[in-house]
Amino acid sequence: MISSVKIIYRAWLTCWHMLTNCKYFWPAVLSVGFAFCLAASVFEFLDLYLQLILIYVGINIILAVSLNLINGYMGEFSIGHAGFMAVGAYVASLLTVYVLPPGTSSVFFPLAILAGGVGAALIGFLVAIPSFKTRGDYLAIVTLAFGMIVKSVLENIDAIGGPRGLLGMEKLTTLPWVFFWTALSVWVIRNLVYSNFGRGILSIREDETASDLMSVNTRQVKMIAFVVSSFFAGIAGGLFAHALQFINPRMFDILKSTDILIMVYLGGIASISGSIIGAVIYTILLEIMRPLGVWRMVFMPLLLVLLMIYRPRGIMGLREARLFMPLRDVVTEKFWRREDKGADDATP
Amino acid sequence: MAYLFQQALNALQLGSIYALIALGYTMVYGILTMINFAHGDLFMIGAFFCFLLAVYLKMTFVTTMLLSMLGVACLGVVIERLAYKPLRKAPRVSAIITALGVGLFLENFTLALSPYPKHIPSLLENFIWTVGSLSISSMQVLVIVLSLILMLVLDFIVQRTMAGMAMRAISWDKTIVPLMGVPVNAIISLTFAIGAGLGGAAGMMYGLAYPVVDPYMGIMIGWKAFISAVVGGIGNIRGAMIGGFILGTVEIMVAAFLPSTYRDFVAFTLLLVLLILRPYGILGKPQPQKV
Image (cartoon, rainbow over all chains, first blue to last red; front, side, top):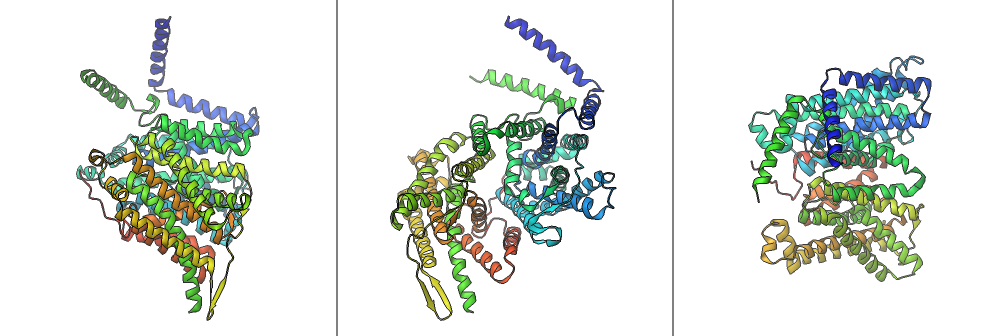
């Protein structure tokens, strides 16, 4: 009985690997997903509530994957991610509400989102500068302070609503757009992580001084990691603003950053599939527990604490689904796994 | 000039509250190298204990203070035993995330039980002395004097007693100290108890000085106290006191001479500048990087 299950599982695994190794696998998945999202929003076979949840899932995936670049792959502890999100949200909304001529905002929507991302990336560039000298907990404080400064500046500029917030955005964030930006951010960050620069980012996590000695340009690498991460946080912010059609500075406070951190560590650090799983589980679990009212935010942290106690690395910590790895990494990892097993057998 | 003195008094009051909370962060950090992000919420729980004891049990000032400190200290030890102890060998970030989770749990649990802000009755009669154009309230003096006494007691415990010596030894070297017969678990629990007790006392004083408590009040004040701990050099007890007073002074002075909405902005900008100039805080020592 058990052996037959094993055989079926093996056969299924082989088929799955053949499928995923196929050249057309990712284009097929992406086009099917995009077509599904397009159909869902055009023919409305998913009701608006489900669509909104899917939009939030997408935004949270972008946030979690981009934060994982800094917290997971680079090994720094950034607590100010919501600040970058706020910059993106405000830049994009200001563009669509005030700057772009009325009626054309749906045409220029991707450009507005892109501008939000670039705005956030500029702030990320500023945060990267103190990261050259400060490390660890002190860098965490620097990012926290940047997040707070962004919030405080937004509250003090009366022209953009101040503490009252900004409204008047059209509902431009649709499911296909969210799918597009999510896929783009996952693709860019996955390719960055497995590129030469990505190796540099990983080496900073393992040991900064040693990687400096090994001729990794740590400043450049940190700069790139912060800029890319904040760019995508800004994009998520722009999407968020146009999905909710209202933003105020209080939305992007420390609680929002905590949410993103929880998604990253729930899924597991240094794992793109982990961040996706974490974002999906966190968003959907919160929605499922909505009938509990106030108590859902009591149970959610409790679940998180239990998960951390029994599985401190999160769901996929430091591991990656085969789907997201380049083939040469799959082979190397298989090789090293076998080596490890041998070592375990040898030790009594 | 009198205005300046008046604000300096306010600054001392706020600064001593920040310093008391910052002590809890810095003690736990010194001994476990872990940031206890739930500490700001222990401060909030302290204020709520004070509210419960004062309103429902009609206790006097001294018993309220002692009992709320004791209650928060017990809660701190329970949290340490249940949530942090299993993670002592886990990666550092999982302990930090657990602490964030515990903090969220405390906030939302309190929110679920009492959704509206509560008003704390004044337990002591409030006198106001007028010296020239300066008016000094007895509450301010009480907060400042009490927190100074608590800090002196703490400094005595850490510098002069066996338990304090054990604490300093553990933060010096974690592998050798247990071999010398130091009961590490008991000392860690004691550290949490003292830190949380100070946080509870700060919560009570805050509740008396600014008499409204709500479940989310611990977040902002907790983070600011954490910032003061870092400004002073995290892990350093005297640094935390200095950092608390610096942050309190900066905030009050900004609120006094600039529009008060700039308070957070200026405080955090100063923090950034300070961290860029002195990356390890005022009294912190840079740790050499070894390869």
